[in-house]
Length: 315
Image (tube, rainbow, N blue to C red):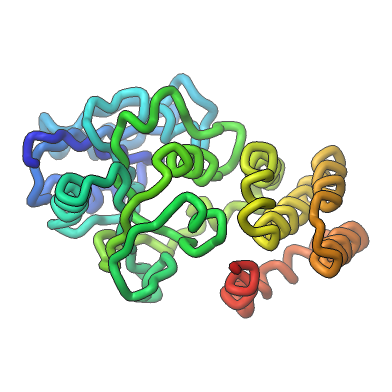
């Protein structure tokens, strides 16, 4: 087990918290690691922090190839991995000392090419991913159904990656790559324990800048429907509707009428009449709502009833 190298990609914008992130990685009980710090800042803000560690395990690379942003910067890191497995740790997160060893042990002993574990929100002290209070096998269809939703710590066999990369036109949209990999693997394993502390603070978090980058955020939902729409319709039409609804919102904020027309046409594929009418209602609600009101309304939904809404969209 110990001879399998793991590549840990740390995408960074030079936050001071990178020190804690790197310290937690270098403190792993599993030591056959390479740490790829990929810097998305033109001036190389992360380099002085990396230099402080003076570790042969750390490889520092600047993102010069891909579009700046979370997806492009992750792609830059993927280009340098040499490990049998790979994972990501953001520069404001930390992993527990036994994290990599725990994931590798499950992957090798149980024969899974993908293993995920839960994370703990740094502010909330709660799981950031859905939990069923047990370790379990999952399938690609489980992701389509929304049974696994939220932030997890993911270890993946590198041979599943191939030439696939994140779409750097999008803002975030990690599931575009993950779903492609999950579909190829067909199944994986979930550990119902915390192996990463996920930062939920800071205004520069990707999830807190969705409206700011709405013209790129809308592409997340455009491409998910283009690439996985038929799978969603087959497995769970309610999840298909969920992604249309999110796409409509960001298309309106971005004033992207081409995408709005795409999402409106996508509604036609929903066969359930009441579900179709619900999505049409939301479409016209967004069309006629002022942007400021729509943003405030969306923020209200996320703070109050979104967990219940997500549960309703699952089968």
